[in-house]
Image (cartoon, one colour):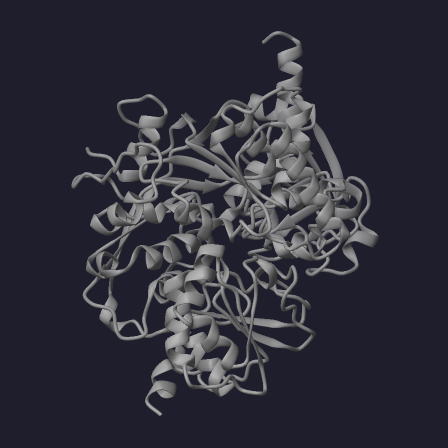
Length: 166
Length: 422
């Protein structure tokens, strides 16, 4: 899968309360969650984010709560991929489970400027900066994780496999 | 090479002789847990699988604790989804208003989680149960849906880190102070993906409640689980509560630890974590004099009877400062009732506190004590992230119940000794 989009940059330890504050957790509606995405980190984000945009952040992205509403909000805001120097473990698993591509890579976090356009090859784990030319490597997704992402999440993946009798 | 307690529990639940850090294992689950925020999403995903039953209706626990008693129509609708699901699937361990407590106070109290268990919960503080010698970790709603369907979950076996607290605790120092101190040393990703095993004389001396507080906040270091080997105190705690057999595990003497951290408990003062990360912990003396607008005593971290006794011990015969609001939230109905019988609730009300029915409430900025812009709270809760308790321009300081109660009396962050010596 090839992803292309404009970047938004955030710092270290972006917690799940910043991604989707608990005051909005009285719903599971993906679009409503998306409309408050990153609200306490950047109030303008949800209104300005474009389909395909990419989040680039520092260490420990998604720390804190187990709320799957966090990757759901990011995905439904139109974000195509999150690149971070490292991820909190529950967020990482949740993102894969709901089919939000995420990549762990430290270098682009240093180099990429807000607004830069990146092209990402998930299968190869390659990140290309088209605005300020540069190429970065991240750990590629293993095949089964690519399949989960392509299916749109774990439940779809399991359902498809069950339907195919596998 | 021996194994750690975490590795042994995972190995047994994966049907393996042994496991090593980094291995992927599929484990049988003794229990799966969700709450009124995470269960609706899990149920939505579970229903897509088209199954007529959960793996074991007796091993699914649903606790309506976050936005309950329901704060608005939307949260009431969320609880309705869970209530109907519990009825449809015959889930007996469904806890609603009047029976419910804060999940991580409730499950140990009810004997639902036991030593040696392997369990997941769609709540990051599920790691609390490591205090009983269980492997317990937080997951998201989709993993929980799969867990409800299969009674299994895959894990990467975590590397273990050992934290040894030597010596004796100082007065007014409890589990909360130890874990805040620890977070201050290793940081909020200091144990990312790892098991945090707590040991040493000071841990042996802690009550089960103090250990629950410590393991509760393992996730604040990014850990997969926190754990304490079961001992006589654990046995005494679970003996009257357990309704099924269980097994106590212990780490081998030659188990491998990626890191070992040793601390002298006697040198640890009561701690306070400054905004906006739990790792910003400092001795209370360095926070002295910071004025607060609200004090919250409660939560899955510090809403247990011992915490209330500690707070009441300081508040008895004193009044909370008129400059702040004091909110006390017993963790469960049983804790509430016992606190009433012991006269603790009377102490709180006479001190000018609002005493609430059990709820997660203000800890996550849900209800029952939301902060306005520019306001500052001192709370016995677990997270002081930006906006966690209300307005994004509010601030939260974290501490144990003794510092919280003392600070409620003076109106600013205060060492408990300063209040009781007067």
